[in-house]
Image 1 (tube, rainbow, N blue to C red):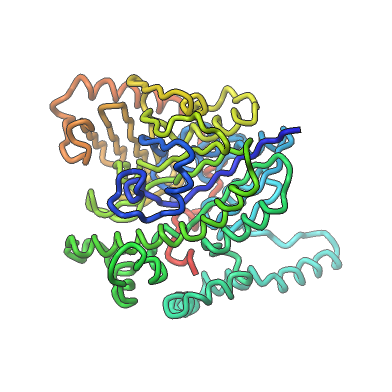
Image 2: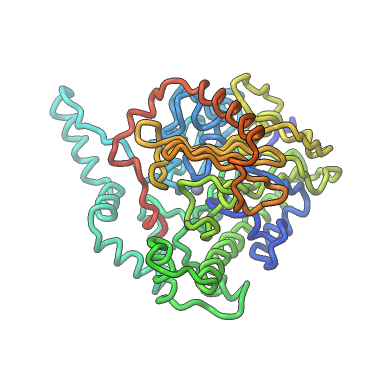
Length: 485
Ligand SMILES: [Zn+2]
């Protein structure tokens, strides 16, 4: 009996305009470019959230971040599509190393195998009233849990982290030696080899999700990946300056074109680094599947390089964060269109995957299957894409108790941004102003009123915060500096 497989590859913070398929002047990812020739490039793909929690919530639930109880942690009533796949007998495998996507945040649900490079865990209290034997076993288990010990060292002692990043900078190969002993930092070689060896030996109906963190800042790729895309390397000292000074405190420096260029070279080097390992997965797919396999490659959000006065990806909803790459390759299928111009969004991924297995799409899903678009592009000029998150003073927040609403509503031609904290409204005419520089909110009153109406009716749909409020204050902000070993 024929069985189908879906492989979903997500690359954190990958901007489409740094890929040749989206007209970048460098070929940062030659293996990816070659692989996606067999499929369809979606030129206008958007995320529904500008950072990992809001974006992945949209991808996995097909519901906008603010709705159904919020997005971080995912409320248990907000189903993720692997749960539906598992109910239908599909074997589900996931591997990631983004602390926002761990078991703590409810992303493990529905996965038969979930390799969780998570950083946050709910504190387990010592079981009471369970007898001496159980309590001693519990203590022994705690004592022997090297992962907890590693976590304590890593997040408790500043010096430990300094030594760790020093080792990574001076002796990058140590990453691979230490990797089996660390609870996080599944870097590209690790993720790719795990996925490749799993795929090689598996032969059932399968859904596999692999998430790569390496393109996420800090940007510190091996020199050979820099030299693969440009003529000269960037010294360790300069890398440290760019990552730890400029990127963290841009206000302290004059951000020259030279600085921006160097940061982009480092970023492109990380893309090239991931690409050099993706090829392992692509070659297994090539050898193993002749048909009945759908490969989806995308990102959760983009990355800002000071286009609007900020780096990183939080606290704004400009297009440098909202535009994402999206490729869909159906193995063995030759009649698909090569490029789709329709505006598509992350909430469309879950319905697309269910549709491929022939599973009916739940009513609650807000996205649509993209499979029909592979046959014939259909441009909807009426539709709107909503992207939203919570923020305060430009810092990402996880719920409406700690942050204020930040929303972008985008049509084919226009984009409206509302920042609740400052009651600020921006309106851009994307067709004439794609860089979102000229705010027309005072001039285009009719347009503004239309968008306000959409905004208000969307906000009316927000129900109680639900489980999101359970999250402790201590983890409302994530420090990404130490994710990569
Ligand atoms: Zn992310």
